[in-house]
Length: 376
Image 1 (tube, rainbow, N blue to C red):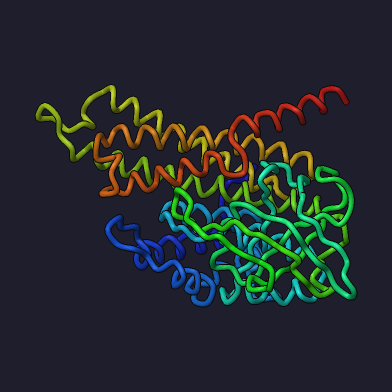
Image 2 (cartoon, rainbow, N blue to C red):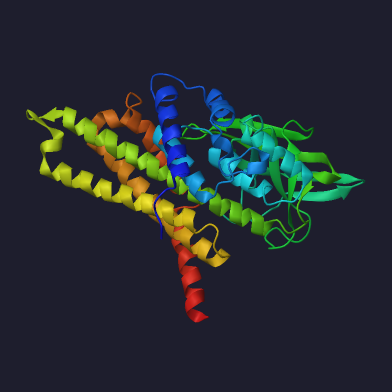
């Protein structure tokens, strides 16, 4: 397995890292303009189009480019919906042969339009097929009724990719369709809030939302395979973000323990704390390796992809919890305040641990695949 970045990928990493350090460095005492950052990443740097088709203004990159970008954003604690809008929604749109999807991709690449997937429901948890929202044909168009919960990135989105059932029972594999819905369409109400890590999210209610016939994207009732692949791509990018996040928490902890003194000696001079930070370093390296594992298996067959993604997410979830908790503890009482960056990073680490499924979910997912392979 080749873990070396190409010259272009290394340039993307270095350019983005340098830009974030100069223009978007995290400061717990100052709010950052995330809208300006989004526009800069799209219009000025071309970062938003790194994984989008080259003929639409993107760079035509793969999951490795998404990994590079997400890693840098995690290290800078940039609370923007990159994974939700670019990796997941963009990944869905570029696999749909539709004129509207193609037009949106060009606008997504330059940062002028945001699109997010609205798939989660109150009882769905990690089951993408658990869709109670319904879409029915009305005249020459569609009418959608239902509700979506915790749609990250929805407050700033221009379009929503809404999953709705056009056939079958709520947990049937077939019958799930994907619709392109304007964020300001009549009948759509939104309750906005911020998640624990600061990312904006919304709960959506769709009451007799009327859409034209071409709002249906892709084949009717057959959206689940595309949704599963897009979610796995999102998990891979999340693993990369976690790698950057944990690396920054470790670096800040090492720096703090070199400065903070106890009994007249720097904390870093105590062997027990050195051992603790070595364990943190090992966890960071595990998270980084897991991110590579996930990114490099995205283009394989579905079984290999799911197995790699499940293993990576379980590993990363354990790593961010371990590194985050130890970073806070080694900072002492200051680690629990908003005065230092580590507390803010810890909140994002806590969200990542549960996002797209907790470790137990992915361990079970991995075990199921391995059991099926052994019995075949």
